[in-house]
Length: 280
Image (tube, rainbow, N blue to C red):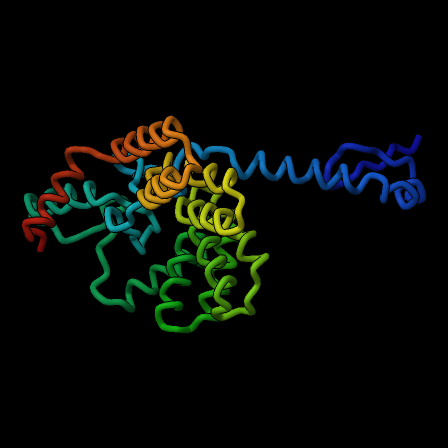
């Protein structure tokens, strides 16, 4: 017995044959679009468990979305917090060791050429972080087409930062033909993956388009990830009567909780060293 053919978009209806689908599809299209939009929004507005950066693989404390507080190591593509980097430096000084990666312990490359070789080795291993870092490097060299190609590869492997960078390229037409639809698509992909800047950008776009409720939702999610600028947007919305006092207070508490979760004595010690200019 031949099974019924499902609608591949919404899974709401089943057609008994190809001719049945052709005859009745037009009657179903409106309901189908509504269901697809609802499913899309359900995924889009789900609060991520953490930012796309996740935890430092050494101390297992959430990484700050302020990327000046961590760094990517070319040898293993791990993102290590400054606290663990600082602790590693102190260990090396005490034991009179050469400088090495805090995670994999490989010696730190002494030249950019050596660092680039490590990155390319990681790319050959299909590492999306290395692909994204290479894309950033190519972008800085103004080789935008090459940057685009590396971002695409990393984005296909789920790297939220690469998805965000792709959105920017499509938005401004850098290295690729300008395409607002693709820019939005990659912003949404990045936001779903926990990228607070992508999420905030979506909120700004929705606000500009008069979709205030959606804008507020995006800002709340970004604020819950510790995004400072989303709080600033919400305060502006509050002054314009678009956000309730309770919602703003709740977002402020969640934002502070997210920021506090990234703190540790080790990270504070690293910041103090940097403030005093003691790191050599």
